Length: 359
Image 1 (cartoon, one colour):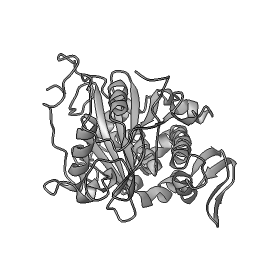
Image 2 (cartoon, one colour; image 1 turned 30 degrees about the horizontal axis):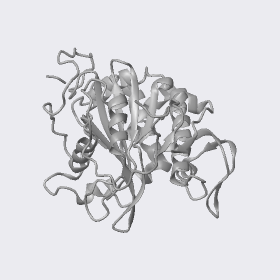
Image 3 (spheres, helix red, strand yellow; image 1 turned 90 degrees about the vertical axis):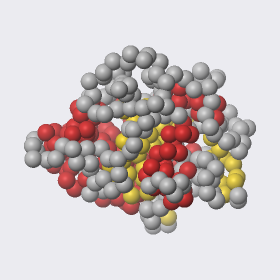
Image 4 (tube, rainbow, N blue to C red; image 1 turned 45 degrees about the vertical axis):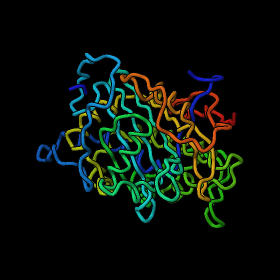
């Protein structure tokens, strides 16, 4: 089984309710010890699996090295050396995927790259054309989760090994369960008249965390400002996870009720053994490049196909041959929001937050 940047440009990083996914994923990855000390646990049982296991497609990916050696990870991967996990956060009704992130675990380089896919990304499916509606209105011959996986896989030419889903309503209980998130708030947040977060050092509870990651109205950059805020929150959340260490183990039973995944407990243990030793310096988060546009009266995110191909080739196809183009329909390509420098999660936590500029 086989399992160039322009003008120093860096692709931008992160978006909404990701904190739920990140907190849950991080807790699950660190809590693999819990799995190991519970021998009676069924190591082949998917975690809350409600939508089936993804079908394996080993034939559609051209490798740089056909003799790619076994990386030692005890998981059935599509490509040796990497594991990709699609993480979805649903809206209140559970019909739209308001959060979409793709985690690439590079086993050989001992690093993690995260791709944020904006919820409004245009994929020309359904009335709105947005990727967040594919779960509800995509291919009727596929289950909802497989609709989303199929579109992400085809749009970005990247394999997807596993999935994790969670409802965005679960942000408050998940954050409260771990005791809140210590964070340095850069500016006053007025989510609503009676929902205010003051600037400075704070420990955000679950409800405040939801306000922080969803707020965008008063940012000069609009939704891009929210991207920046969520990046700060992500770094703070992961730092909290590492500080908690083994105390997270006892929380796994409570946290597991919030997620749905086709990862088995045995696979989780193998992945956790890898992920818990990855430093924050080696975790980078990128956002699909593009710009705002309109389709059928709806505001959408028009993906820039050439820039997206460059992004995927550089950071998300470490063992595959490069793609020259992606099957993306551009509605507009006149400007791009991007980071003017690259920063990993440790840099961000220490206050080195890249500016988001418009080209």
